[in-house]
Length: 363
Length: 266
Ligand SMILES: Nc1ncnc2c1ncn2[C@@H]1O[C@H](COP(=O)(O)OP(=O)(O)O)[C@@H](O)[C@H]1O
Ligand SMILES: [Mg+2]
View 1 (cartoon, helix red, strand yellow):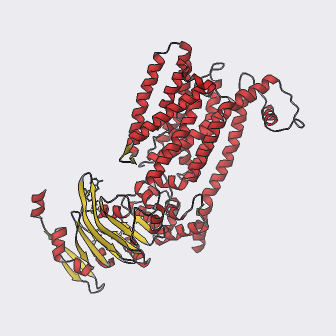
View 2 (view 1 turned 30 degrees about the vertical axis):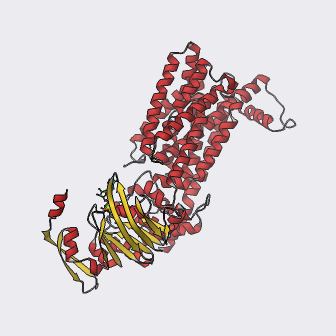
């Protein structure tokens, strides 16, 4: 009997850890493979070895070891077009999945997604103004990104203040204020679009609003990459508090979480992260809603595991969604948001029908 | 560790739920709070564990205002078993109990061997060790309650605040949990609904009615026929039980008392 207890005790130590590490290693391998595939595929197919040879020769001083057997055009395609694009997919996918996880804990609502705070509709207003009327032209090539980010920041601040009652954040108000502000700003965006002078601009604006990685450039990578990484590390460091937040307000207070402080911090961090991601690739739906649920279904709810695994799954999912977006109707391209919704929706419904997963509610 | 509740008034939605409450829990004492439904027991305890802030008065832990102490510090010293046991998302039992270790963990500090041992021991104490990896939401009400108690134990606090900690438990586990609380030699403040249990375990009892403390004293002095009639509206027979040497109450089912003065004031 004692022996059996000892074995079970050992289980507390071992079980989760193994599954986190194995899952992480496995998913990293899948991510690397998906990334390679994504760069290979396109109007000009590239050999996988060439993909990494180009990458290595671009990043490391390896002229002595790698003799270029590829054309300048190929190098250009791989390094200047496909690499930033797949990296943006990884950043956005990982970022949105992580934000979704944190926001679901924050509002204790399984339907919450990164856009619940009105961030994406705010960004859309800014972006459409730039695309259709050339506003913010003083920012040059960064006009779109800047305007979108400012829009998301403003709507987030608005929602944040609407959600406060007597200095405290009410999560129900947060949800409702987010929905209301989103609806208003979406209407504003639609108004801007229909009063736009040019056909081409409308198409671009629509494309951007549905989410798109087609504008990816190297210059757009560092800031979102850094912000996403820092945001992820911050949230991961708070995994205990996030777990406790899911247990409810009383548990949080009695276990020593500074509830109001922590909630505000979470809102600011997630909103900034969303703002940065949305401003480079529009609002890509479903990732932030769906990925955390899938991960919880398989790995349990502990945020120590859920956050990193969600980041990896989100990244892989978006890399594949982008592959579909580029290839299905090639040479045309469709907004990635269509792909994520079309793949994600049915999968989510299937998940919904499974009784083994409670979605954070009663079974 | 002692708790002092001084002149505490608490309002919810404009209604005064607690009126000028005075209460002391001395170090090492087991203090019970009894009273009919809606008398304000939970509200009082919520003020003590800082989910509600008193509108007037102060609550002190070792002479220091609990709202001026750092949250983590309070959580290291005061553990709570409250009435809401949310079954949100699928945590397993070990994960829930581990949360009790949080106040003792520094930033980025991982769970140590010691933490895991504590978690396991606490689960053993409440008889839930074989459920370590069961998902919390699949447990019965009483089992959930025992897990929440294990979480509070894992906090290793010197004060336990319990809000009807045994209301879902069968009699064996009721006694097990309260024996446990008594044997830990910690300070306990508990709202209890079973008056015989209160009589058996409490060193001191506060009786609440309509947001006020109407009586306070040792079980023998407080649990009287008169009090039961006035506060709980029941006729009962009260005696000293020959085996336990504690107060024992036998309710007389035909003796429900109506309170005309209440009916008039509503
Ligand atoms: N959130 C709330 N909103 C409004 N009234 C409340 C709330 N919580 C408690 N009350 C009221 O406060 C009174 C005391 O409740 P409570 O402290 O839960 O009593 P007890 O625990 O003694 O049964 C009741 O009349 C109840 O209706
Ligand atoms: Mg109560």
